[in-house]
Length: 579
Image (cartoon, rainbow, N blue to C red):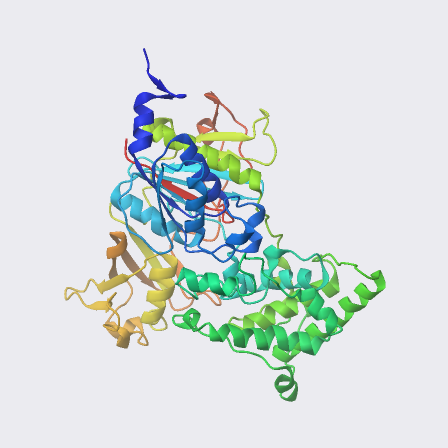
């Protein structure tokens, strides 16, 4: 007769109580997950999150309260979860860790590739998940059995961390999202999730959690932060375009510059001053209006004109009125175009035409608490399969917004095997990169190709030239003199091979160089055979056989491709012990 402990078999209950788990991220999914884990009987849990609690988290991250604002998410999540099960052994980290664990749950957007590689190196099962609005996904990754997280190219990220939007934008879309937030803060419905002022509690700016908490709780000990409403301040100025400009593009930027830790490895922003720009104004734009890229003063004038028009619209609607941003409303579109381009210029990005901005300004995906709860429950169920030694029964599960043809919101799909062409989990990872060896500098190879594109943390790169020439070293300062030199200066040409190693990830990648004289405009390199910013095509009819619901074939596909869905809003990963 099977012995039960509660509703679980005794063997499984014993495994649950003794196994060691790492949860990466204590946000929307992470909070629900920690609660589920301790109530299921997991006793040995480590949780890591580099973020601190913000007021905007409180509507969905239910382990946090108002008094916790500014404190470490990981630490507060631990303390709150222990109230459900005081006997649990939970360790919280507000820093990077390298630990031996049984399996891993992951929630941090920027760490997903790194965690994937660490689990592959340690041969630890990984449960990867995410949500985006009403959509959600859970999948299991096991070395040699399933696709890894990087086997399939991911679609471009549609949502971004608040600290990126407010402090360290690096792409035009970050500035466009910021400008849309700004429109709502000034003229529409204010939302704590859409703050545009510098984020003083950015964990990257202050690695000491106590220092971060002190900044965030500067006014009240209980964390009830007193903030001056952006809209109230704008009204007090009479929506004066020049005052708004100098506050947003000069004063706020100068404040960001005081957060000097942010700029140690980034190019610092350059503040703008209205009166200085006015004195040096000139306009060189030409062509169709929507396709013009104006100079800085041109966008200053567009900012001024759009603010004056939107101010008039507010006055016509009366006291307490609000405007709704619409990409087809010319003044609203002009405002976002101007504000986004001015911010792009400040952060040394190429400015965009009105047409480009309009095409990129998609809807912001909200975080839904119930979606997080459903996904967190599915994560634990997949974890129980792993602990029961039933990896073959694990599934990728999609949560859809609407029922499929079989009236199912949850659609399980059989896990795909590893991709033979994956540059991470293949037996001998190898890629071909197309670039101009006479125009590509070593610094570009290091920062944009090896680190940014291929996700290495501390790479060492050597040329396979028979001499073992070291091009890039992870030891600080050792090869810094190479940074400003071109690849051709080291004899690299068409057909050259580079070996990139990352000791921290136990990862080696062979890079084949394909020299070309010219690439598309603004493109510095291409990875041959990949479209990294596009999701794979939807499944074919043949692949539909892999879609299973309640043990039966279900030809109705989930609302997103099983290979291409990227839940960037609330990612979550968990590692479990091997069965």
